Image 1 (tube, rainbow, N blue to C red):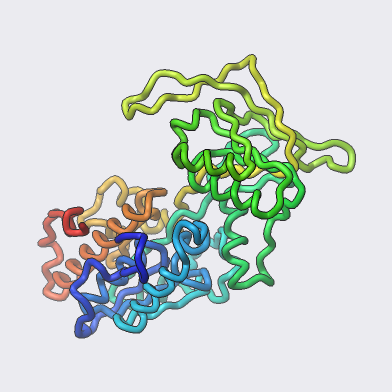
Image 2 (cartoon, helix red, strand yellow):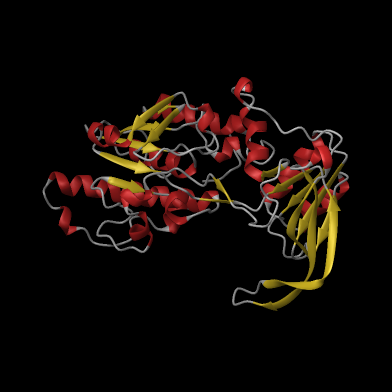
Length: 377
């Protein structure tokens, strides 16, 4: 599914709108895997209901990635096509809950909670596509000080404020010294965001060199051209506490210098700390933009670990009959294309299961690939 073009076509893997088949599917999560699955299943005649805790469909494509990378209007147009042409019903602001309540980024924008069991009872099948919303942490002393934020905590309010400014508070960086840890696209987006909001100084800290940076050297050059400062071969070991009236608030970050070790089996060189060489960077705000992990709801109840190990009979179906899982909720953080592919595989597996179950033949499933990557080109 190409990112360029207007609008995004989330039903690209199907043959177009189809006559209804009398079956319904609930999809939890309106990110790339959920939207691709919704498009595919609607092309097979399913009535698809998509539930998402955020006020607009798109997931982190809308609420985490800046519009310069993926224009929100293209996503909105693709969603409108799913609703108007394919009959997909969207339920924004709806968090699907279970016995264990969670408090994740974006929950403050949900206005309704619906139980998973209610969806299972009300639909022929359910698909879990909740994405990666749990930020990674550095696990170093001082990370809990005031003024330390994750990349998602910094970026999310900027994108979400346009939908509900009353419940969003952007981080004030004006005239402040900001240190961003990381070198992926999230880190670059945070760094540019801080510059755009008037930070006095923005430093980007990375344990390897710009040649190994996931965002690519071109992005770093653009950041430097915009007035940012790049520091490589350093890794944080401690966030420094303030003194006096600033006690409990970040005052700086202590890093240790590194050198590159031998390449691993993937050809990536490791960062080896040099224990005697330390660098202290003053900071009013520290942002740890080192990515997110998947923390899907009801993971234990659904037996998601067994699904990941493929210890199942039906591709991407959980231990609850008729409940499937796709995207980052299954694989962990991935690129948009991989999440889309996972959503399509789960959608076709789901459809096959329902078809064979209707004939009491669900045990006849054969583990042939439901969709090949060539089919998506």
